[in-house]
Amino acid sequence: MNSTMDEPNVEPRRLRFERRPSPVLVEHRPLYKICQLLLVLHISSRGGKSSLPRLHLFNWALKRTDRIQKLTEAAKAKVLHITAWGFDPALAIAIRYAVAEGLLRPTSTGYQISEKGQSFIDEVLKDAAVFRSERTFLKGIGKDITESMVEAVAKGWESA
Image 1 (cartoon, rainbow, N blue to C red):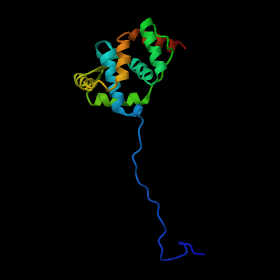
Image 2: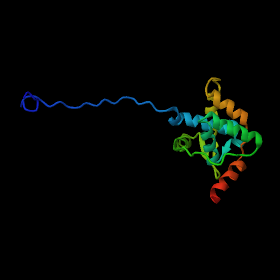
Image 3: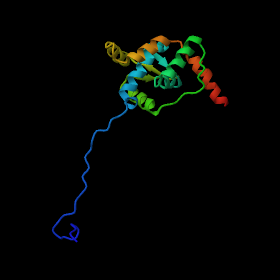
Image 4: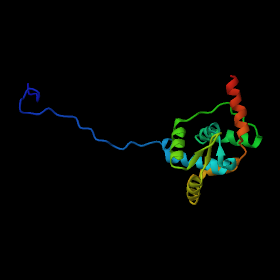
């Protein structure tokens, strides 16, 4: 039997691991989420402010075209017919980074874009190709998804 384990002068083979970059989905990249947040606050929020549930609603809608359509219809009807939406941990992480970088600041009811955040999103908006679909969607909705609409749905969660 010619096995390397039986031969005293031969070193056993060792496994070698090489770190390789692994792709991160765009949806999970903090900078992408931060830009989306700033766009929502800049384009579709009164005074650049929003509650956390409302930010999660927009984040949830931006993931699929059928959800975008539902939110667009709700904005036109002035009534939110969406009974529930997802709360994304990636958004929570992006918010923490944005606050740490001074792009957002916490308020008593949610978050507000800061001067630094406004400057940042103004730079992003200089390139018309960047976040084109998000811009179109948010401009179409405008400021018509209000905090009171979101609160009305959230009250239904509490009573359920």
